[in-house]
Amino acid sequence: MSTTGAHRAAPGREVRGWWWWERRRGAVLDVTLGLLSAAECAAEGPGFADAAGLPVPVGVLFGLVAGAVLVVRRRWPVLVVLVSVAITPAEMGYLMSFVGLYTLAACEVPRRIIGALAGMSFVAFFLVTFLRVRQDVASADLDPWPWYVPVMALLVSLGLNAPPLLSGLYIGARRRLLDSLRERADSLEQELSLLADRAEQRARMARQEERTRIAREMHDVVAHRVSLMVVHAAALQAVALKDPQKAARNAALVGDMGRQALTELREMLGVLRTAEPEPGAGPAGPGLRASAPAGGPPPGAGGAAAAGAPGAAGPGPVVAVAAGRAVTTPTPIDTAEDGPCLDELPDLVEQSRQAGMAVELRVSGAVRPYAPAVERTAYRVVQEALTNVHKHAAGAAVVVRLAHREAEVAMQVQNGPSDGAAADAGLPSGGNGLLGMRERVTGLGGVFVSGPTDEGGFRVSAVLPVGS
Image 1 (cartoon, rainbow, N blue to C red):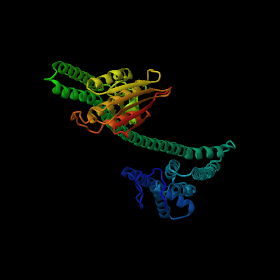
Image 2 (image 1 turned 30 degrees about the horizontal axis):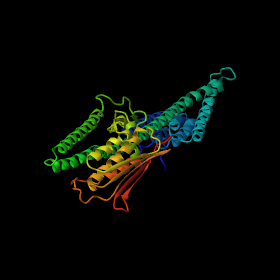
Image 3 (image 1 turned 45 degrees about the vertical axis):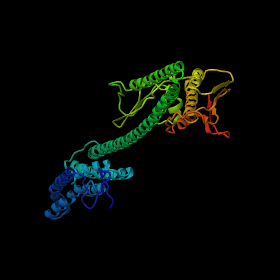
Image 4 (image 1 turned 45 degrees about the horizontal axis):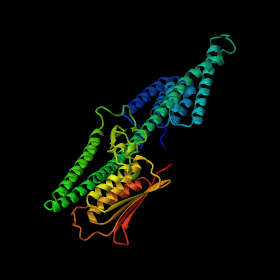
């Protein structure tokens, strides 16, 4: 038989056999109520036996058995109410009727069953009270008001049925509300835990992307100038004794490039230091909150956030708090204002010329300013392409093309075959230059193509959308 009671079993626990109590105090309470009900019915048993013409021990035994039914009120509240209704004509079981109605109204029983049983109990008490009051009035030879007997029967029936019924309905509704709130709290806790896990995953992804971006920035800043320094140092070694004046010029160029590289490194490291979160700064409220400057890339964004829009982020890190855990995503290491722009492209080409490279710059279209991310990316593409020529095609002629179009800006760096007579600078290569250029360009929604030419040289081409 399925369990139906005022108290539902806790989640994950089954009610087995006859032992349906979830707590020991519940069992103690029900057994105590059963003993009190049995004692009450046993005390009322002699009156029932005398009215029914039965031996007194039979009436007492009947009362004991009927009253003890209250012990199973949690398991079978319908049975308890039916028994109380059945013994109402015997004028016993008032405690069982009161507790049974309360338990029935508070448990998970359909409302139509509760209404039917409560109506049966009311009718039983009304009839018994009506007959008893009418007998008392007749035996006392009184002539009361005509409606006295039915009104008294109605008041007594309401007094015995309404309080336990209303109390049970209130407690049942309150218990269901608390269960609903508890389930919602558990669901919210699970959602917060999932959000915290996702925030941690996004933070890990953002940290990985930031490490990749830092490596790319360091490569762009250092590789080009160090490559030129190595080329000039080799030229300085070759002409030191033959042409002291040229050697002095090369030495001055090496010094200038070294100072420029150190300046850029200091700026980058300075941004890294100032990007740390301020002491005591953090979200002040529970739940899940994220603070990021307006226009900053969302955590876990793809290459567009890493390569094309670092300048849109502010100096502070993104902080998320979920389920009691704080997750901080890294902040972009530089800003658009500090990055190079296309106006500096002639200086970049001139530096390669001073290193002995035959490089030509061709610009077509109407020159106009672009977004900082677009200008920095275009500059870095040309810079890295020239660096690769210094590394892998010493002495080759280079043509740098920059085309300003209506909705895009295109750049191309093409070198011819390497001059076999040129000395190899012996520069190491990690193979990250082309990968970094591709990440930057595709991050802005552009197109990047690189590969050897039919003449034996190498070509790097990129097209960047500039928007409206």
